[in-house]
Length: 114
Image (cartoon, rainbow, N blue to C red; front, side, top):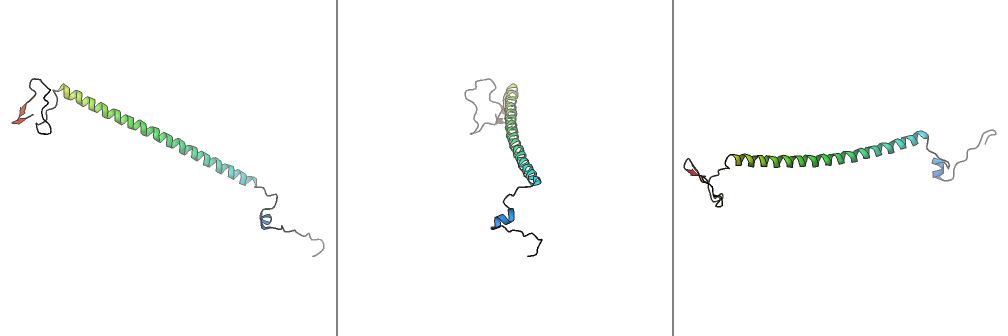
């Protein structure tokens, strides 16, 4: 070895050679890690909020559709009652109502009983 040159000591094991005993992350790496964790938490929060909002909207739409269907049925029944009911051709599957005792219950249209 020459005089005036400093000798560099090599660490004994491989882990000490690559990281050193007092290894610390640079501030840019720490900041990047914090940003990455923050971004991940923000995306998770937004996903949770979006899924909850979607579920609430689906329930509201289902309730609205059920309400509209119910109102349609009620309006149809009201209309049919105001127009004297609905006349259906008499058959095995749709016999006349024996408990309905009103005048003109049974009618004939074009030779067919209703």
